[in-house]
Length: 498
Image (cartoon, rainbow, N blue to C red; front, side, top):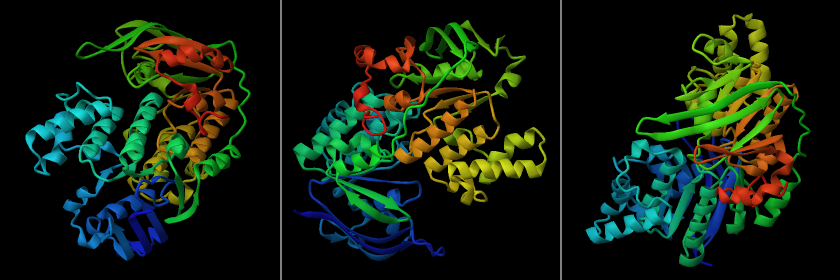
């Protein structure tokens, strides 16, 4: 076996702070490995990738006690600008990596700096966009891309470099189930057929178990455990909770009739949607990216005004006059938590809604500490939210909603960016909320998760509602799901085995 990356890290710190961000790491990655790195929030996963690329010591000014070698060379001997000869790196947040106006320019940017002939640049741009499923997007503006499309563009830019090592930080976090499986298959092809070494951080490592040969589990800056894909799957199956018994009432709490909305540019968001949600329902709203799920939620929340149709919530038509009152009883979780976090400390973020209600400070403190303890953020109560990792910010957003005790929670991909255990924690919180007789609308790409926690599955396709069934009947609609691009057998905390 030929080593391509060798790490012997006694400690990585960022002076003047003395905390060891990485510690006691002795890792050799061989040519052709497909390694998944997982672990809880702030466990050091992304920083391990930064260290492999040389960014941690050379760009972020980290103090490295140890050695890191890439392709046999000490990273201190490789300028960051030349690291792209060896490593193609994709960041966790695609927007942080896009620098060009159009998709074509973005994919061409890296290879143009390699001074390749123009014909070769055009060939690679076309080939990689086709590879990631974005053929025809060449002239699209990058600032108008969805999260999933942005991830594909960044991946195409990385793949165009044709490096022997790929270092990928959650490359499918914004994609639907079909998009994830497509990209996993593409990356696995490069690994299997082209001999490309893949090092991938995944909060939900079970998604790529069929393609990997090694799983690294990190905790507190160290590699806590290394296991095989089979051992990791067995470990997950032992932790899966049984499906919940959900009983909804016959009282309709949300009703939409003939709902239609069109965005500027004549882009259809929703079309002729009829849906009734009962008090106590736990709805799993599923569908591919762009199917209209988020648009429907924004219409129900009053963030968008429909072109046609009607919305009734709590038995009353949704109007400008009663919008504030109705919203006070609905908790909305955006897919991107940064869109709803604004306070200077974690505890102030959670306390905001309680202070608006003018509760006594003693009661506020008790409620805030209680919910922060539930989501595992009590130790971070006094820090700025932007110092949290992405998944910690998602937990903060959920805590801020739960503390207000709404009647309805609308959750748009609340487990995005969370590992299996953290996803289970969030879903258990939502389940406990529903078990109190409340209502949950969950948007998710994870059909296994929906099967485990919901009582109804509502599927959208091409901006229309195409399926509304009891969750226990989902097995009878496998063909329908496949026809709209959803494969139930490939989803879930442990590959849909629960």
